[in-house]
Image 1: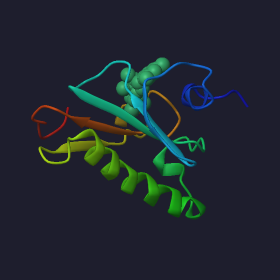
Image 2: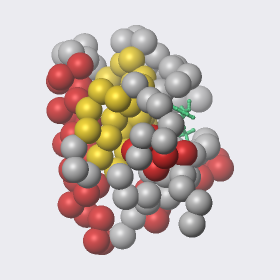
Image 3: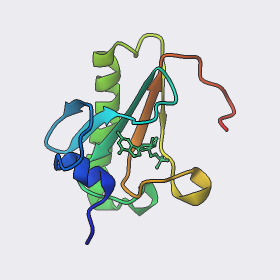
Image 4: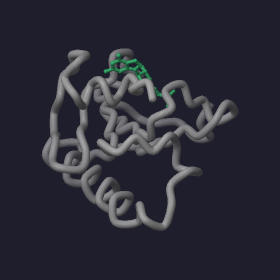
Length: 114
Ligand code: 5GP
């Protein structure tokens, strides 16, 4: 199987500005930021998208959510606030088929989202 773009970032085959990593996940700056802070948090396991997560991924998905909060605190964005986004499939705006959580902060977010 061809590695996903984000697997190549995990394996240091493509450079990225990494802000956090542990045994299960890695977080790096988005190459095309949509807010003053725009990070991508991904599992090392290449789950294509949230709709394809399985029961065996329960602990990993919980870890990702808690890690998003931890990174927000560490990056100093938890106080003013931030937004987590997961795009799933064509209508969701997914471009990279490797599950990722966008962490967006540093400006007032709008609602409804585009
Ligand atoms: P999606 O649209 O799939 O939810 O989000 C994919 C994100 O990956 C986009 O925000 C895009 O800017 C980001 N991205 C695409 N290619 C690269 C890359 O090579 N490096 C980094 N750091 N981000 C990327």
